Length: 199
Image 1: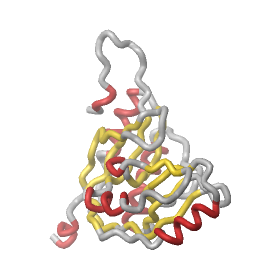
Image 2 (image 1 turned 60 degrees about the vertical axis):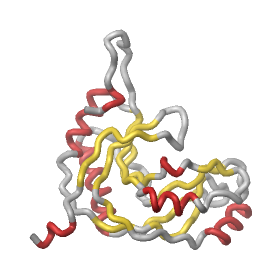
Image 3 (image 1 turned 120 degrees about the vertical axis):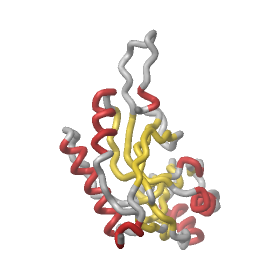
């Protein structure tokens, strides 16, 4: 049951949670990524406990559809897989809007994301308009110049995390008013252990 969707009897208003599916970043990787913070004017750094890799943004939806999505995601059957954050970059070109940790578009990740896309479209959600680019947002930028971002990336852009195992994906909720968290895990969906491939 989605935790945030419970409404007390005296609160008849409709709950519109902002939901997305994603992958969690383990604490030891989040800690190493957090060491990349600082040294960039105009950056609003994301708290390390809110680092995540978005698979599919869902948006503000009603209670009934949220529960339908939660049930549909439970049908996903995938193997666990290793992942690594490899380098820092920025989004936005000449008007940079975010600093991100890049993630290689490996097949297990892209196939998992594509399955989420298919399932959510089947439930009536509009197709995602942009090509999927896996990443972890490190900072949102306001009034940071392209030169400042380039200097930051020259100094810090060679970041590379240790490899970590993706053993589940989750359904996150967030406050609609502010980007960057806090994010709450509403449901978790385990992936089969890699060893089971050979069973």
